[in-house]
Picture 1 (tube, helix red, strand yellow):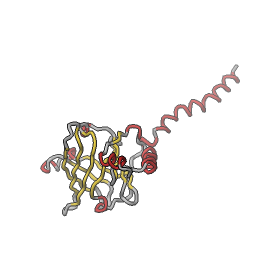
Picture 2: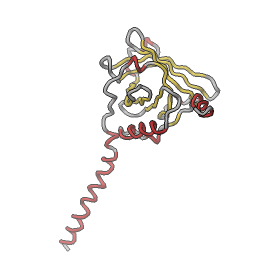
Picture 3: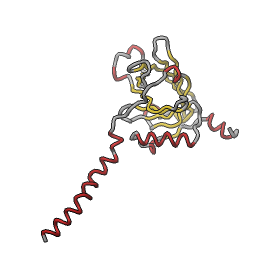
Picture 4: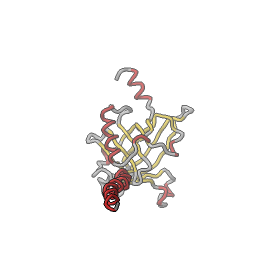
Length: 198
């Protein structure tokens, strides 16, 4: 009886250990610290970016499509931010803000605020904007922040090739993001291109 109990425990112990460790292994990427890309050429990053997909968030609930961001480098090395989207009523909503780099001139970590300038000294009005994925041609980017609560996929064009999008989603999943949470953004320009066979 003693030997049979030992055998059962010997066989069961590794299985129990694996079962106990499986959730930790599965969540390893989620709990690992998020990293931004090594460096960012800020002047090259400037210009218009179309939102391709995002994690749903409270401050974009009124947007139903045609969401885009335009960045402009200012003389004081900060970045002018203009976000636009189409509302359910068909109106164009705009939000103007400013971004600043955290770190050196090639830092991919920025902070953005949309509050009035006089509140700029208050820490909580600034939100993290980390470029976590960017192709060599600066045509497709992913933006998030340390907690992974927010995620945006941005493109220079309103439509991204399927293969390129799939590769990016694989990389994001490897960083611990739940890509199933991503909400596609309707872009009228992309629809027009599809209709015209572009």
